[in-house]
Image (tube, rainbow, N blue to C red; front, side, top):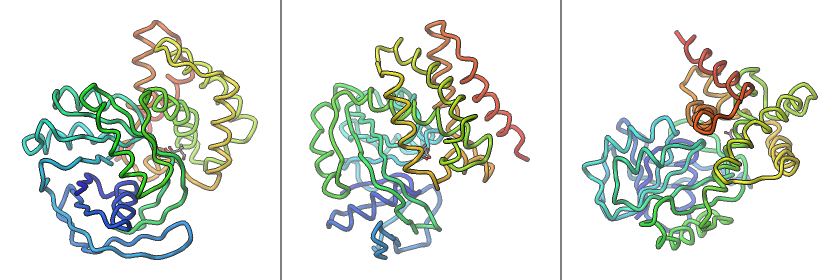
Length: 296
Ligand code: PAF
């Protein structure tokens, strides 16, 4: 059985697709869930429904835990369920941003911890009601040595959503996602524009600057990307998701706490560790922080 913490867009996307292939799924939510059916509109416009089992507590201490909450909530959900998690239980973290795996390891030092990053996209239309809006590659890989023997989990997840792969060097994939997020998310959130608007020349200039600064931190961490290649990838994501509003854009729009600390904040911590100047990233980070502070 799969236990998924977080019934948001990504948690429900995995729940629906695992159920679709006959796997048992249990959803763990923050507050009691009154819905009993999961509604899933797939990319071919097929509407499917699955009956779901849901609770606010973990029900099994052996099965892998797929954690699909935002980076800002990961530490809290682990603290909430810590007493029910057995040391051999595999923890899979799937969210934007970096820095959470270290928090989880501090709380659960013996558990296998897997980090995952997905380019699948989905929209939560209501409680347990999702619409898949994009498909892409998912990578899972070990954060600690205890997780190294669990690559079979990537195969199981691949049966549910194809293009899911095990990647020993997951840090590289997580950094790539981070570099994409720092180029897209804060700008779309501050200026309240969709991803496609970043194709405008004024934004492109800023993206080059942000990317150049962020790459210095990646290099210092021994993660290497060629600048132009990375800019091409960022612009490809911008084109492919042109109509979408980024997750940070939506968070600011709905006055929610964003993943700023785990995107810009993470990069700035690395910058101070290696004495790197990052004026553009710092400015984005401060502007998002200011917007969050302005919430009533
Ligand atoms: O956070 C997001 O919204 C997405 O990760 C991305 C890739 C920026 C596309 O909108």
